[in-house]
Amino acid sequence: MQRLRGTRALRISTCLAIGGAPDPQRAARARGWLVSAAALLLFCSGCSLFDALFREEQTTPAYDVRGKTILVVPFRDATLWHGESELGHEMSRNLLYWLQQCENVESLFNTEIDTELANTLDDPDWCGYGRRTEAELVVTGKVDSFSCSDPKTIGMMRGNLNVTFEVWDVAANALGYKQSISVIYPPDLESGSIEIALDQNEQDFRRQVFAEAAERIKAILCGEVLDTAARRSGR
View (tube, rainbow, N blue to C red):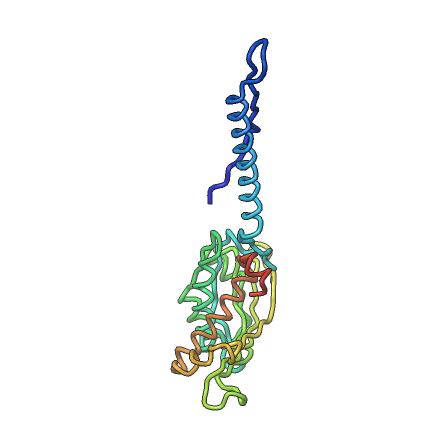
């Protein structure tokens, strides 16, 4: 709906016959203009109210990475190092995609660094990797735990993923942000999501669980678009 801005008040003057009583027809037309003008102003006020009620809002990121160049490095897991863990690669692949959906973010992946990490157990110089690739930030982390089964859902898959991610600030040569998140997927087995779990093989299902975690991290780093109407209705 197009909003009308800067609407000027309409000045309506009732024309009177010189030296006589008001012209009834002109007075009627003037009243009609006044009613139309009042309706237009009310309509425009309604537009503003409608926009205020239903426009989308952007949440404030916990650590703002918008407008940055970000190097995404493979995560590690509880037993395998960066570059060795398939779960770590799954996390970084999904995160690489979701960070690209952020405002003016360029996300990078470097296969040489991936190989270097797999061949060394030394503490990585994350900011050094960032300088090599001309990245402003480096994102990495650890898959703390992951499972596809739940004792309460026998015979069906339900993902439980715990991830810790880190954001390194290359210019400051320091860790800028760190947070752990937990994802359960599907979140509600009573809402019909149970069919999603039943119809997938384990690899496809795992990819969906990690995508859910990556989208959550994206919301933390870039903010999240909320529909105010849906938020008020509790959806």
